[in-house]
Each structure stands twice: as structure tokens, then as C-alpha cells.
Amino acid sequence: SGRAASESPKPSQTPKPSSAIDRGRPPPGCVVVHVLDEARNERRDFTCDLKTLLGQMRYFRRHLASDVETRPGASAELSVHCDIPTFEWLVDHVEGRDPRVTTRNCVALMISGDFLQMEALTETCADYVAARVHQVLQQTGADLANLGEGLLEKIAGRMSDDALESLLATTSEEDSASDSKNDSASSDSKNDSDSVSDSKRALAATLYRVKTEALIASRVEDAGVTIARCAACGLLFSEKHRHGLRCPRARRHVDYHGDVIARHAPMKDFDVHSHIARLIARGHAWRDVYWHVWGVTR
Image (cartoon, rainbow, N blue to C red):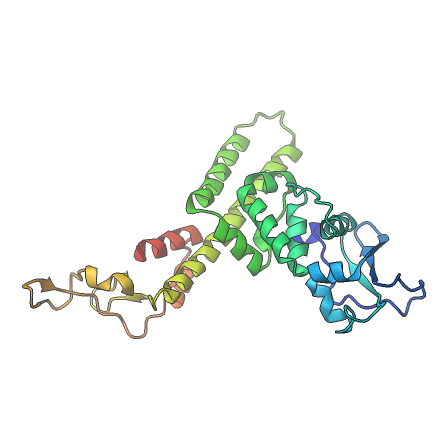
């Protein structure tokens, strides 16, 4: 869960047709979405073109009859639990009114867009969050570390190693500034600053984990490249670079060109994922693990 989820409510897991409720039938070719905002204790109805809504919010297709888009004069009703301003923004977007993505709404839109299977919007919001992560955390305090794995992968893939290092660097600077504040500074202000710093640290650790897993996966997909441990010296190495490396403990031999060869021999039962799990269990930070794997694969 976490603050990101609570500040960015999404449509419920089981939106259902509301025809059982006597509200009159929607106009032909339209869908009425009854939005229930539990945080505000409000309800609002949105009427949209049926084909337009289903074409952009593909999540709703599974909850309606398969022929609803092709049946002449068809209409539908749905009930969802969602933040009303967020759903209003989404409807404006679907109907082509081009509302703005901002640091205040980008996280909510990204989460809801992902849930509703609005791929283009989700990608746009992920671009926005990754490019402005400092401002997003500063202005919203969202707990981005608790986003879904798919969204974390999108953000991690868009943030360079330098950008991620910068996220930790600014956290250290903010901690120093917070410690140097005089006694007249309000405790609320200091608590807010500490909360943002904690959010940055948690997000950085999570993104380093995601980037580590992506780095290993990309090496496996790259012509079968894997990370191995040498049975002779115990060092980790990339199979891709094996022929260019020399093992200090391997049995040497001379090839046909007169070169001395001493190559790493991969340990048969070594598993890189188990190796990383052991490093984390011993207290190593995900940042250190990432750079450890990065160094092995270069």
C-alpha cells in the first residue's frame, strides 16, 4: 500500500454494471460511469461516448458484453471507486481536451492509467515522473517505492545511473541542511523534510533493486550471456568477457599462437540470484549490489 496508493485511488477491482439501480437508461451509444470517491464521501456521474471510452480505457471491456461496441444503440453503466478529480482529468483526456500533467497529479494519473490499461498515458506519466522525481517527491510526498512492480520498472528504465545517484546526493544534502537548522525552525517543517528524505532513500533503494534485476535479465537475453563464479579463484565474471579475462589460479596452457591461456572456469551450481540474496541478507545496500553487478558485466 503506502501513501502513493492512498493519494491516488484507482477504479475498484470489480467495477460492475449498475443497471440494477433505477437511474434511467444512458443515451444510446453512451456509457455512464458512476464514480464513488470514498475519501471525499462524494459521488459523480460521467457520461461518455461508449466506443471512445472503451477504446482508451481498455480495462472496462472485460466488464461489459463482448458485442456492446457493435450493437446498434447499445449503452452501458459502470460503477467505480476512484478519486473524482483524477477521473475527471481522465475523461477530459479521453475526449481530447488535452489536460495538463503536473507534479501534483502525475502519480495519480500514472497509477490509474496503468490500472485502466491506458498505455500511452501511463508512458507519458512515467516519463514525467522520472524526469522530475525530485519535484514530485518534494511537492506530493508520495511513497513511490510502493508503486506496482511494472510502474517501478518503467521509472527505473527511464532514470540513468547518474540521475539515481543524484537522488541520493540530494537526500544527503537535505539531511545536512535539516541538521543545521536553528532551534526556531518548526518541528512540522523538519518532519516534512525528513519524510521527503526518507521517501527518496526508499525509492532509490527500490529502483536500484529493479535496475539490478533488469541488468541481470538483459545480460541473459543478450546472446545467452550469464554471470558466473570461477571455480578456481572464486571471482565473478561475465561469460561474455570470459575469453578476454585471465584467472590467477587457473591451470595455464599455451595456445597455437604461443599465448599463455588461464581462463575462468564457471562453477556448476552457482546461481547469481542466490548470490545477490546472500549479499542483501548480509546487509549490503541495493546501490552497492547494483554497482557490483554492473562492474562484473562491463
